[in-house]
Image (cartoon, rainbow over all chains, first blue to last red; front, side):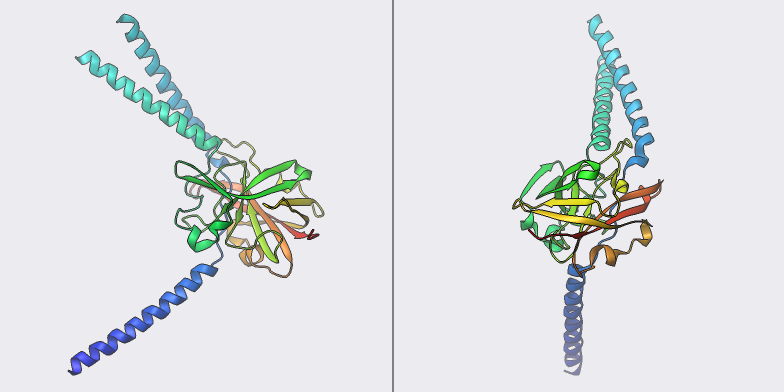
Length: 73
Length: 213
């Protein structure tokens, strides 16, 4: 019986703490100020150009190959 | 048989490369990084989704049109104002493209008492000028206009322009100053940090409402 009572007390305390924490968390979320926005992308210029160049070469080579095979058929 | 396999393989690789080309070009030219736009679940937490007058979707990109326009005659700027929340990293989200600006709808509405915040890109993925490229050309006294969804024009005047290290931006001053009706514009500046995929500074233009007609 004592064990049951103790368990109940602990559970009630946990539930209360959890509820308070939940309310506090909800209030914090609603009023949090966001961080600074990331409003630039120019640093990726070289990487983007390299990717585009490689993709273009692959496409050109593929089309040339397929065209030559198509002509033979 | 071998010939057919070779042709099929080359065809698949060619199509994949064409896809990579198209995707890279589109993202560099027109679309913001997915890491910096609003997370899908944020509208109900961060603001009033009902304030958005229209939405449109391109893939995972949801554009929420606030119905407002931003005009800055001194730098020939006239841009649609998107309504933005927060990104997955907890930062103010950016517009889905490089030509619109983004108003933080979790904060103050332009014209109300408090600090309304609007951001915009400084450049796109090719380093070409984006909507706020010339923000630093403004000076104290420059005019800024917001056309509201209802057709009302709000006139703001620049009071200060500051450039900060990204980690030193005074967030309270930017978002929470509530003594008068303010409009703060923010964009990137400084050097590119490859490891963070971001610039190391931010320029903020502070302005105040001049009328309420």
